[in-house]
Length: 257
Image (cartoon, rainbow, N blue to C red; front, side, top):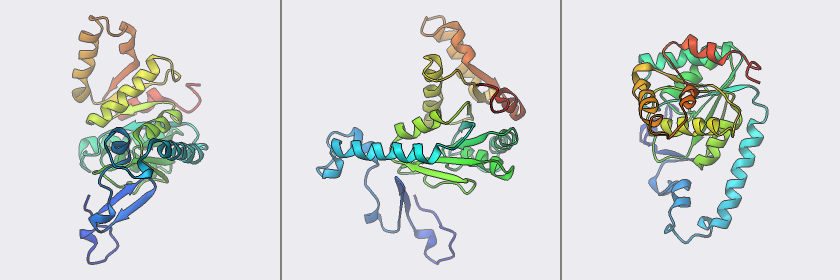
């Protein structure tokens, strides 16, 4: 991803930057990996380098879990907010994200996002401006790189499954703003864990009736009649428009314990 670094150097706009786990690589394409760690892990035909062999990967994955657990162990009560990296700043969706971040922080929650731009940035900004704790959990991707500027604590991960474990382990609730495939993945991961009682029954709140309403209708009108989920499973989702309602559903830390 090409982006300026804001450091005032004349070649800043030509720098290429990518996060590789905890490492940031810039400048020439020769310094940037041709594939992400997740891609290498899932591609059986990739390379012969000893660092790409599965036994070595086990140690790298273990190290990433340890780093995440160690860094987040003192997070305290937190709510994770998911949403699109493609939400433009200043739009109604972005402003709603700011309001949610600000409201959650005012209620005493630490706010966790994926740490990127768009809706994630909006939520982190709201929490940061309100004086709350704002955390971003980034991921190694070939695009949409970089932690936003409103994070008190940021961690970059190589592997999606490690990152998703951190979202779930350190959260007492989930808020989902409009988003794409990644947001849907995170939403249904959270729903599955709540439905199967792998985690305590935390609230899962969808923000935006116009955006999410069709999905909720399909879940209720197609999945339930076909016997794919129980009728009560629909109630695992709360659909709202008002940021204040999100904060009211989440309540204050300790009310869900």
